Image (cartoon, rainbow, N blue to C red; front, side):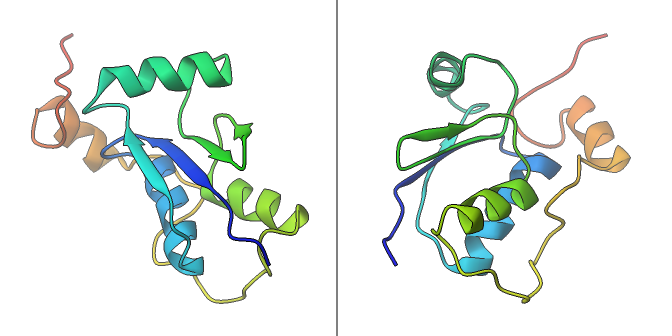
Length: 118
């Protein structure tokens, strides 16, 4: 099976982004991570390539999968012959937003580099 070239546009702290990472860990996939929070240029690049502002976005062998969950990445890669589906559990939820506690910590400036102002 061909080793896919993967670029993942992810947020530093995000349930959806962690779900994508969990799938990559589950299958031992190498990928280039572009943190769109720590580097705004990566957000711009993601928006140009995907045509929209929502993340995570994952580019696999030149195909952009926009606003996608880890579960959806796994399904797409399996359907396209890039993975053999594994019944092994992922080490994090693969289809989940941030928890309320994570949102509260981000809002308080305790996680990541974003500080929300009301």
